[in-house]
Image (tube, rainbow, N blue to C red; front, side):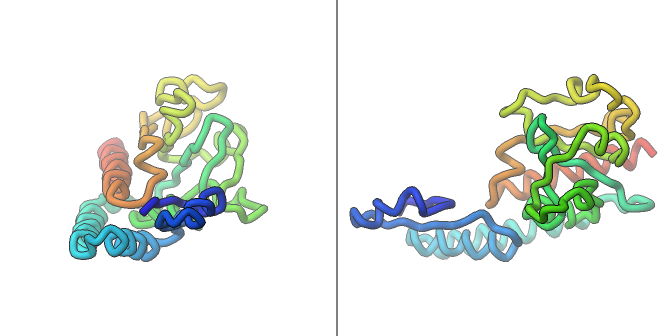
Length: 197
């Protein structure tokens, strides 16, 4: 079958008799596991899919258990692009950060309730996040060095303590086994933050 995240532009495939499996972006971990199992059924590999889900669940539990317990809840800013679009805790990406109890600076800025607010540099500087995660290294050529040179950003805790982390555009935006890699990068950043305090 053809697997897609949106079926609107692929409706003609069904008209042509080509099997189409539409799996929209998940909003919960349960959605991720369910979609993985659906894909296993569609590709006649249900057992393999169930084994992969079990492996993912196990690794996520291990990574969460290994995360340092810091005094207070560290704050973070997740950058989708260099125009300061971000995510809230209500998105799937936000839920990954929630596994290790991080506090999202974008939550208070989502007046429209989209889950993807556009912040301003001033807002981010004032919020002073402990960690900055970049999901725009490939799309927008952003690096920790470039972020640290933004006007006024040298006052941000994450910049002062070298806590700017490239999580990868793909790793942080695709559901499936890459979630494990994403969470591991977050916990690695927490380990470094704990060591610096």
